[in-house]
Length: 249
View (cartoon, rainbow, N blue to C red):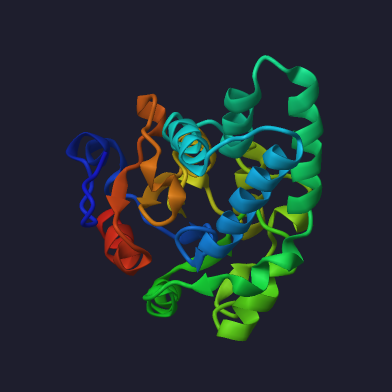
């Protein structure tokens, strides 16, 4: 993959450079929004559920299991960690899974605590000067309240998120719907996200260029195949405009 300073990997650049970048698809959780408070609430609640169900699981054991599941690119790392702690008891897993899903199905409980990352305002303003911008996030519709509050929603030509679209990443249709609405070829778009499984892989398959931002808990993911590897990896949203420029934008 590319390094963490915004410079592309040479082998990928040979095939993808010289493209004209017309649009930037931007994930929210991770690159733009700091959702640590939400994840902390999820983890605390899951530990409480385990305890209430008679499982004496130490936080160190839980977080070790979560770290392994995240590194291994499990799509739902908390459920994978839960299974590793209760296996082979399928009944207990399903009971705790359902209780956890009920808790996490109310995003309005945690979204107000989400904060826009340092450098996001400036990066979005720079990108909007020369590119169409599109939200590309698995989020509830109410997330737009945060973006409006922070004054960063207006530059986006595509303002829909997964709840509006009725489809979520990593489904290829999620990305296809966006590029179709923008009336561009996938090859002229760049996907910016933090997850190699949900952002990088499907975008690579569809033909978009890809930038991975190492912010948030998914920074510990290890790409399991070359298709999971981004064209460029950067440390923060602040480096994204430079990375887009390196990709031909």
